[in-house]
Every structure is written in C-alpha cells, then in structure tokens.
Length: 286
Image (cartoon, rainbow, N blue to C red; front, side, top):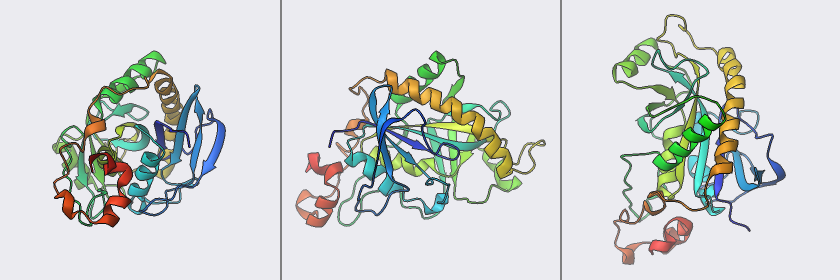
C-alpha cells in the first residue's frame, strides 16, 4: 500500500472532511485492538491523507473509552509522519473567547489511569516530552491560518481532564490559578503516543465556551458547544486544507528520532513477541 504521510484526527463537531476525494474506507488491524472508526483514505489538495473520527461517526465513544493506542498505531502503520488534530475545548482565560482557535504547545495531565504508552511487556522507553507538540508543524499551521485569513493563537497550555462531566467551579478556578489556557478531555494521550511513534503532532483547539468559571457561562451545555463547533469546524477545515497543501514532503524537526536515545532495555532481553508487536515503531532501532 502507498505510504500516507499526513493524518487528520477530527474531534467533536469534525466527523468528516467533505473536501476529501477518492475516498476509500479501510479497517486497520492493530495489536492494541480496533480504532475509533474505519480510517478514510483520500486526497486533499492532491495530497494523500488519512482521516479518522476520534469519537466515531455519530459520536459514540467517550473520552475515557477511546483506544488512543490503536488510533495512533494504525496511522503509523500506514506511514503517517504528521498528525493534524482538532478538538473542542473550554477557555480558562478571558482573552480566549468562544469561536477562537488555539494551538497549544504544552499539556497538563489530569486524567486517571489512561494508557498513554506503547511500551511495556519487557521493553522500556523514556521519550523526551518537554515540548510535547511539534514546533515546526505548529508554526506551519499558524502560517496557513494567516494565509486563509483566520486568526489562531499559537502557544498555551491544555489541561486534559478525565470527563465525561465538565468541571466544577472549584476545579475550573483551580486550573485558572495554575495559569492553564484551555481545557479538554482527549489530546494529551494522542500527543504522547504520537511522540513515541515518532510522528509530528499538533492540536487545533476549538474554543466553544468559557468553561464554568465565567459569570456569563455558569454552566456549560452541549447545545452551546454544538452551536459554536459548527462555526469553528468550518474554520478548522480551511486551516487544515491549507496546511496540507503547503506541507513539504520532508521533515526538519526532531520528532522523527524521538526514540533514538529512549530505549533503555537491554536489546538481548526484549521478548520476541514485543519486538514483533512494536516493529513499525522500534524496528529501525533493533
């Protein structure tokens, strides 16, 4: 199969890319189980891409139920080197208003017990994660947004909570006191796994509300979120389209060698089954 180097993960409100031509739906078997939905292969602006609906079409999968490992591993198996993701977030700062788009470059993990590594079963790796988002890809997304006339705000910290309930006021104000910028339920695990898979990753965080800290948004409703997402997802698609069109074939960042010095296990002691299972990720180092 032809290698597909660009992956797109659509979150709440972005369940498809209408501009995707030559569509082919496939199921990719992974050692971690099924992906959220069938992967859709096609072309955007003449470039081969693969699209995945994070929560499944019809939004059937809760954040805590997502099989993050299968989703990222499947894209790696197809040859993906860059992932553009989009997701709904709440704002924790007055200046980040509903309908804004933020490009976070940091994460704080407030989830509980989610699996966010491919490793284990006799193979240990410690990836560098001080800068969890690919700076080159983030910059390219920001520039693409400028070219299509859509304002994005590069940088900021995304606090990832377990969900599926939204925050209490006490929690929301706590995160504000920490200096967090936006709040969501999905992107931390994707970013970690993408780094382990040596895939560039960036999030288009689509602001839908002010969480519950803001006096005009004392309670967050699904109706409010959906209304704002419908408007914001159109902007996100325009940015993704332009980014796909402008991306060069090669990479100049260091994401493609994230595991170079991360594997700590004695090579002679790595179980054969684990080697085979993770071959598309670690094979070049073993």
